[in-house]
Amino acid sequence: MALKKIPYPEKVNRVLDPNTHETDLRVSARDEDWVEKRELASNPNTPEDVLRDLAKDKDYHVRSRVAENYNSSVNLLIQLFEYEKSLSKPSLMVMLSLYKNPHLPQFAKDVIYTLSEEWM
Image 1 (cartoon, rainbow, N blue to C red):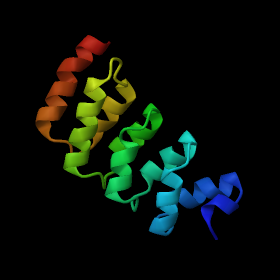
Image 2: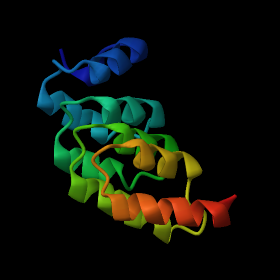
Image 3: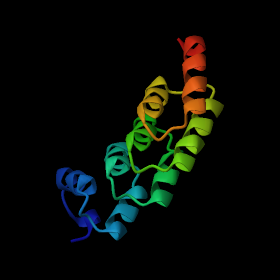
């Protein structure tokens, strides 16, 4: 069953399900609903290119979940880090999520630690 045709709560649950077909995950990435995209960013089977797009989402909740996803590549985490740093008001939630991800290189963690004093 296509995700567009099912009730909203079930749709969000399907996006979280690691067994959901990749095609359905890609369709969900085009949705405007931040809650659905946030849950999509948490799914361990969300394709890397979809996570890359979600890493630039306007909603910090979505970006934070990309940072928390252990399947986000080192390159993606660094891109998200650079994107977040470039914002006039970086999200502390996203930066904390990046900092906690064991795949983020130490140099980026050091920068987050240093900049956190300025942001507080």
